[in-house]
Length: 171
Ligand code: HEM
Image 1 (cartoon, helix red, strand yellow):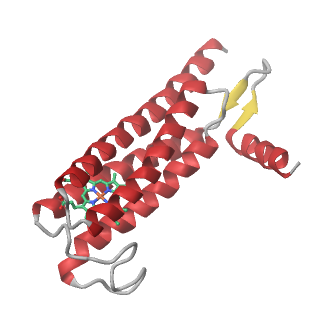
Image 2: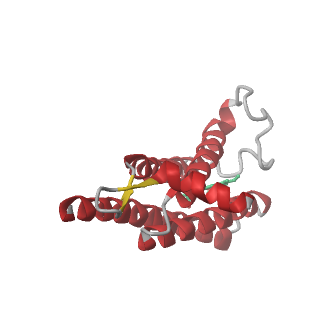
């Protein structure tokens, strides 16, 4: 009952019926898919940057650095703190995308669900990069999972965009 109501609420936000009765995808879904993609890209950029600075274990605590969530971070782990903060925001957007993409847009829904699953794995891998003090296999898995998340976030964005365009030209 509650699940049914929640499903209807998500459908009301993400899609509506067009004049022909065909489901129509709201622009907000494409926007949120694009924001997710941009945030994953930014997280990766910051990750590679602080890895190159050899500051990978500047902050040895998990999930937060010693400054907590909103305290001013010390300079030595500023970039690592930024990486974790942006990663948390990116994960939130990826989960939101997976919820918001309607099941009728099947390929995009599948890609969004894969991205959401992988982001959960990535958060755990992030924990292990810290706990193992950058064990090479863990770092390699963290990097390759990040690239795969980017690929699925890109597929989600492309497929919602293509789906919407095809429906618009068909009407
Ligand atoms: C959406 C989530 C995330 C993505 C896409 C991501 C991506 C990346 C990428 C691409 C790198 C660079 C790897 C390299 O150059 O070898 C990196 C580095 C790193 N990430 Fe993440 N990351 C995410 C979340 C996290 C989280 C939550 C943590 C820990 C709390 C974390 C900890 C680290 C650490 C410690 C490094 C440095 C590795 C090194 O110095 O070689 N990451 N991340």
